[in-house]
Length: 148
Image 1: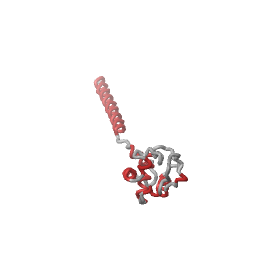
Image 2: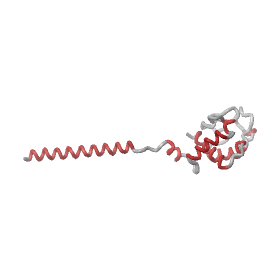
Image 3: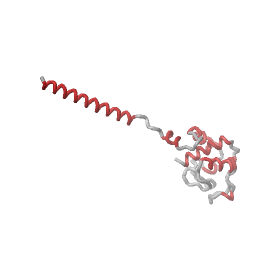
Image 4: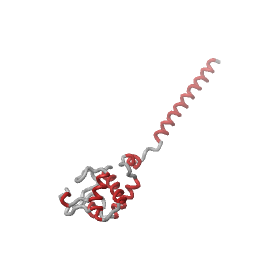
């Protein structure tokens, strides 16, 4: 009889160990399969104050619908009269969101343009009379493509 109890006890212990192992395995699997932050979520946390992913999306559309593409190209990689906006190199500013807003707002006179191939300066408000809100969303887009 004691032998049977020991066997039954061994079975109980083995069952408890198996349940614990499955439970531990399931919790690890659940943690591993839990939703991870998306790229846009992590990007959103790295955006300047006041800039949202929605602003960036609207800025993308506004950039491509306005005069920006004439000098910076549809891919924003630059053309002879406008620098590449997708890299981390800034010729006029250090690349903060506020500086991008200011540059679009004020423009850059020809004599201050540091791009050797540029024949013209950048006109204030993109030469298109952009509103303050349009400037902010375009600046948000430019910031996002240069700080990826």
